[in-house]
Amino acid sequence: MKKSFSPFRVVLFITICLLLLGSVILAVPSGKKNFWGYDFRFLSENKLMKIDTRHKVDVKKIIADVDTTMNEVPYDSLANKELMGKPGDANFKINDSDLLTYDDQGKLALKLFFLKLEDAAKKKIHILHYGDSQIEGDRMTGFLRQRLQTQFGGNGPGFIPAVNVYNTVAFTEVCSPNFVRYTNFGGERLHLSKNYGILNSVGRFTPEYHRDAQDTLPVTTAWVELSPNKYAYSRAKSYNNVYIHYFDCISPCKIRVYQNGNLIVTDSLKTDGEYHVYPLNFPKNPGKLKIEYDAKISPNILAYSLEGDVGVQMDHIGMRGSSGTFFGQINRNLAKTIYKEQNVDLVIMQFGGNSIPYLKDSSSVRNSVNMFRGQLLALKRLRPEAMIIVIGPSDMSTLVEGDYTTYPLLPYYVDYFKRMTKNLGAAYFDLYAAMGGKDSMVAWVNSGLAGADYIHFSNKGASIAAQKFYDALMTAFAKIKNE
Image (cartoon, rainbow, N blue to C red; front, side, top):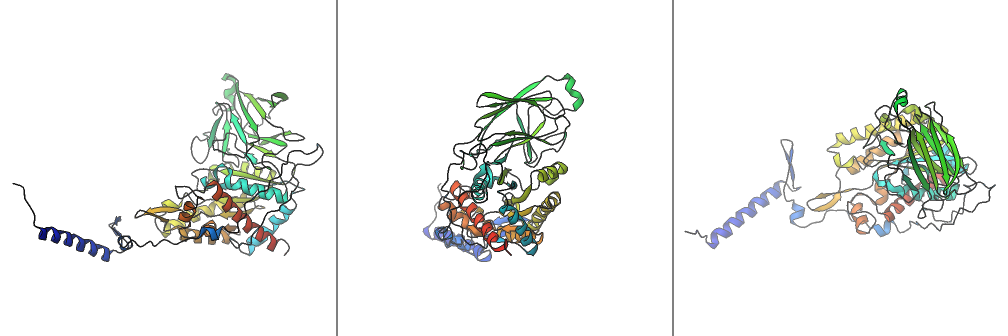
């Protein structure tokens, strides 16, 4: 027999449920309670009342004065005797900004760097931009490079990986299938050494072998094609020098270089196992180059660099998934040699985004930042002459009760990160504040300036973020260089 309930009992049951739910909400208005080390979540008071507690950010106001216009001029028609890399007409707007912070020690280091920057039209300098997936594809770096090279001189994208796996418009690279990428931050690793160079990746066309194994091995041929990308910024796609950076060449290695299909070089690499740079110099942009290698044991191809004769070389070193803790995974003597020989005067470290989702409490924040502090100290030992600028994490959102909001510990992380950086005599650019602070990522996503993952900028958003950094750098330049 089917049992029935009177209307009174139904109403009574619903009322009791609502009272119980209301009691829980009154007792735990935040909607979250920790029991025995586990987080239990309930409907929060704000969610019940449909109160949006997120901070409202006016993106239009934040980016109103940001000028990302390039007004590019073709730069590839130089006469044979002219230097490629002279400054151009920097006719873009630079806004005053206080987002780059530093102490007195950092101010002195910035002044020394700015003096070198002013002299870059006479002597080539390198700026290394390390970062995680937020800079992947040369997005922020490419914009900054064009700004710096236009104002202070320089051409070409600088260092590029021996085997490129990320989409980029800065250059075009195609490798033979037997060229394998090895990295120290994920994926295939080197097993016999840590000789990754300063890009933290190398290319090889044979497995690693000891020198005495070459008598039993066949000769292997591999190749790479390099050319300008027609979609690159004008300075990046115009260069007249190509350099092969290599290490661990322990077996005879012949190279052949073809320019637009014509053989122009037949030579061999040095087999002493040390760091060397093989130069290919041209009176103007060489177009498409194909470099062929023949060897029984592949050297570590550390990188190629595509450059002008003078000026700023800004090198993009994107490392997806990295938290910037890589100096313990490389041959530091090799890195120190490259930093010195390539005249590295500024290192930008843009990390933090990969750490934020895993922070559980203030202690984990301090541990994460202090680990990164060790990396900055290692960098200062490797290249004491270089200025260091840290670009902290952007705002990042996580789902809380169905709404995207800033990760709870991100503001504390940024504050602690900033204080640590300044105490080491480095400078800190506050990307979080530049975006608008708490819950700004939601506004950037809604404005098409960031992706649906609520972490990464869109191309337009990356350009705006890069311009904000450039505004801050040039504000410091104007204030400090003549003091």
